[in-house]
Amino acid sequence: MWPKLLLQVGELLPHIRHLVPLAQKYFDKGGDASVLTGISESIQSDLGQVKSGHASLARQVQEQNALLGSVGDDVRRLGESVATLDTRVTEIDARIRSAAVTMKTLLGVTLALLVIALGLLIFLVMK
Image (cartoon, rainbow, N blue to C red; front, side):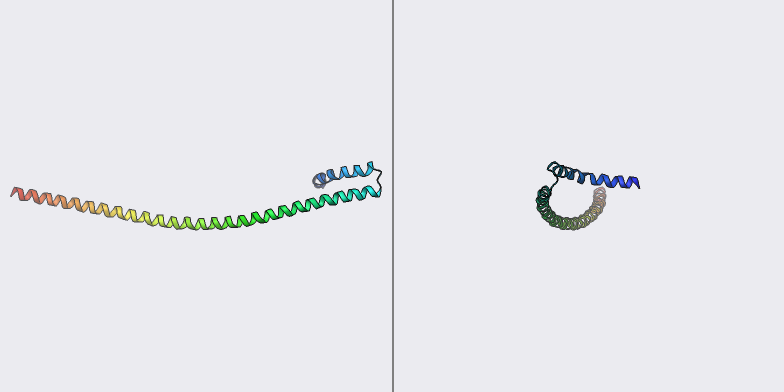
């Protein structure tokens, strides 16, 4: 239980750190209602600045979300293009292998015909 309590107090320390100067101002000036009003106005003006900063950040986040959406669409289209190109490369590879087999077959047939023609030539010359 105590470790949890200490962790929670640790989380509150930055907030308390901001309140200490305000309390110091209050006690330095005698602690009357006008000081509290001044501090309240100061806090409200600071809150206004925080809200305007928050609105700006929210707008930037929305713009970045839109940009990320378009980047996601681009990545999806790129993936589809890569898949299409991969299919085409596979088809071209199959065609090249088929052409290589055909060339080897034609080379073998040509060599066999050349040997037969040479044999016939020798046979005719010997006769």
